[in-house]
Amino acid sequence: MKMPSENGFRYFLLMMLVVLNMWSWDAAGQLAVKLGRWNLLVEKGGVSAMHMITTYKNTVAMFDRTNFGPSQLLLDNGRCRDNPQDQFLTHDCWAHSIEYNIATNTIRPLMIFTDTWCSSGAFAANGTLVQTGGWRDGATDIRYFVPCSDASCDWDNSEPVKLLANRWYAANQILPDNRIIVVGGTGVFNYEFVPRQPGEGTYNLPFLTQTRTSSTVENNLYPFLHLSSDGNLFIFANRDSILLDYKNNVVLKTFPRMPGDGPRNYPSTGSSVMLPLSASNGFSKVEILICGGCPDNGYAAAKAGNFTAALSSCGRMIITDANPSWSMEDMPGPRTMSDMLILPNGEILIINGAAKGVAGWDMANTPVFTPYLYRHSLPVGQQRFYVLAATGIARMYHSTANVLPDGRVMAGGSNPHFNYVLTGTQFPTELRLEAYSPYYLESVYAVLRPQIITMSATSNVAYGTTFTVTFSVAFGMTISNVVNFNVYAPPFTTHTTSMGQRMLSLSASKPVAAPNSTTVFSATVTAPPTAVAAPPGYYMFFVVNGKIPSKGQWVHFS
Image: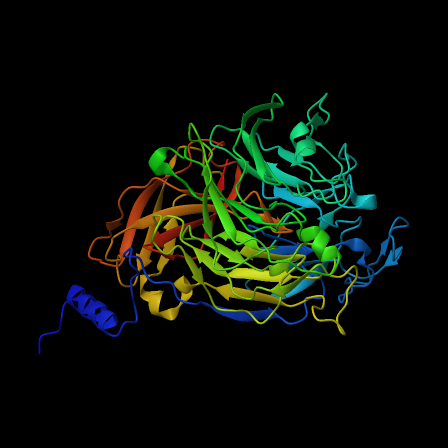
């Protein structure tokens, strides 16, 4: 009996999969979206994840605030924190930060000294987390966390240099020169840089005064920051936005007001993402997506115990157009306090949040348990939003999420109370950690999933240089034969704000099959051209076959 050739067998298998409808395609010819699945990772994390960030050492750092009083996890090795400025425990042996190890699915306590409540952060070029501000004794602090893979690292709270203004509910963005800009905060209408250059101070930003609703309901806290392709900073607050030349403190452009009834920033709390940049246009086109928020009267109504429906609208604007304007569309339902993340294949995930109310202590109900997937590349008129599998855990105020290198999304946190309240309430302080696996991790797509075999360069890759990637695909290429090479800067997430999040689809040669193989391929990939396109630092690198991404490999651009 004559055995079928390798190509013939794979073609036969493909046809069988199509006949059995294990694979299916949508109207745009893309692999169909499936619901995905949820898995509980850690039952008792001990610390509620108010802030979260994925590190290049394949760990996730999380923390809440030091003046909550007792958490549910003690510091290790008999350590305690003695801080006479703490509001509740001047002698505190409880952890308020944890590190999650992705490979071992374990946590360990970390120690932060001053209060990190509603603070901000960004990665420096060397992968160190630069964490800024907070409340009371922590309002001007700068803290550092150098990631490690051997459980030897902890927070460095010893920085003698302080911020020049109290930064509570501020936002951060790494810049091309490796400095970090820190913008705004409660009652603060300026910005500053970390580290500061000699003679630098704070720089007034009247835009923050203009966009504040009132002294009690600011609606412009945690402003959305995105580094544009010309090196200037896009800032969105409330429902307005500007392009700031931060080097000269000059507003270069004022954008049209976002349509719709309601603000989009804290405490009304929508979310924002810069859609992936592409080498196809030299990384010059920058498009911002903002979704959710609350009506104008949402905060006052919530204070009176009346939780009004959140906004369901989203707006997209190409900020690099000569005459930019907002294009509006609706999510499948109203949403506030949700996180927006760029998945490894470039699609957008909207996760966590509530359908009614605003951010604040006990000021929302009706949690939204189902994430949404948004396929932004599809044209108007085609289905862009998909409702995904529901979690069983309410993730509302003070919840977070982050993309993991294996393509899953970690979700944690949710604490709508001033302290830890674990029983006797509808929405207790949430200490569980879980992971959502998007459709591309379904077993039916495993034969399309690339595996990175080698990369010729991953450390200190210079801008504009090339490197070779060798990868395998069990079933060869997809029918469309589309392979992308995406790099992703993971964000510092808190209060629905994903600081520093960025994806680029890189230029590459067409993958070529290895000699005598139909499943192993190599391609020459070109690194981002400048630090403006991709600020220096660590990025997850993904090979994406159609819509199915590989596991991420860390690459460092400098």
